[in-house]
Image (cartoon, rainbow, N blue to C red; front, top):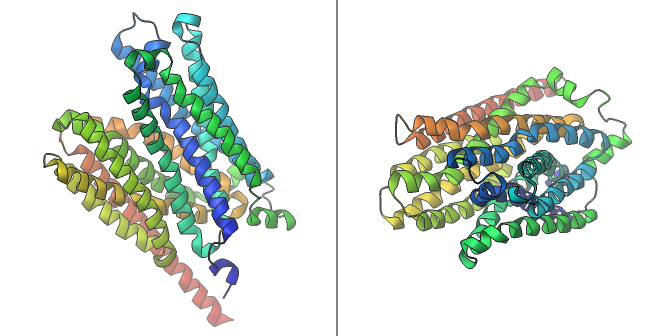
Length: 436
């Protein structure tokens, strides 16, 4: 048995995983903090006489621009990650996030520089999107190529939990500022504080990443001169179409479940069921913490049970828990925390997704294949999911539940696909062994 692939995580593995998760959490915080202060940003960066609905639309259009910029930034950074090295792009992505975040906190408002204010905010937001497009796939590839093969699931699940922790950190910072500062102070200077914090912490994380090493997999490819000679993007389209489809399907599961259960649910609870904002946000914090735990648990299980079984069982649990949560929203507040916590835990099945995508592509084009599939699918499904759920609400109050159940079914089908592929691979191996 290969002791390299079966050994336990050592001190260097934990150091790599910790620094990757810390940097990823801070980058996700930088990317998401805009939405928590969208209202005040809209007031400051657009004309005062603009209709409120138009101001909201334009403010959230700036937020959405970050998602649209993800594929381009991710593909470019992945190309050089497959050609020049994982570590260089891993460090560059956090720098490209930290500097625009600092700049956003220092931007003059509309009263100071007019139309240039929202245009500069839009530019900074697009740079953020390009950075996050390289960070998330790069982090998964970087960590997966460092740890032993039999511990890849736990490492990817833990890293996904770290990325999600950035959302929780943004929520906590916004809550603290809004409870300690008056609305006037928030409008005057308070909204800038989280951007300055995010930028400074990002620079610190970049400094800490100096101590990381290039992945053993990439170093071996360099030594064997096995780096992709062709354009990596062309290679994945020519030879790995099935892997692209599978990865995009699983990214839909990952992105949309988090959007619906974690990001949209508090608003749905308040508007449809009359649940107080404070109570819904407290329950949301519980669900987010449970999501972090769920990602780590799913990663631990997948190393032992395999991706196919974990995905099928996890998606069944996701369907049951999410349906029960949305169905029980009119119940008692005590049950709200329990059911929302279980729903958040079940969404943790998304911790399996990065492992499947990392293994779907060969090392020479792994960064490009994962980055293209993940970022394009995230831009499409992350943006369209709120629109689809909102339109479905016109026909049924359980629209969010039906949407998540449909995703869970798609995830189970992906699990069947993986199970069938593993059976076929085992059969081919048996044939080759018998023939030899």
